[in-house]
Length: 79
Image (cartoon, one colour):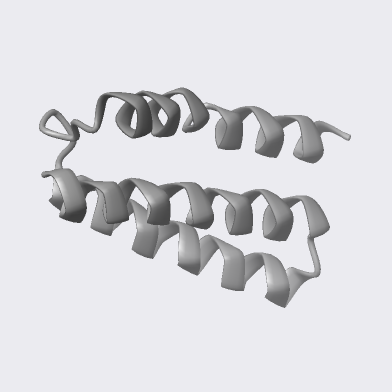
């Protein structure tokens, strides 16, 4: 239960940034390097979650990968 709550909250933390970047069409304040490094880390956490069979870790990190992917796409498009 704690894992699901933690994963949900850390994943949802990216949602306001995605919405703001989408609406404003501005990603100037986002660091491309940080997003790429963070994405790599989240991918690795997802693989680790798969290795240990942790559904909360897999689900939350897979969702975060999608949100960070959207931010990177917007950064390339509007940055």
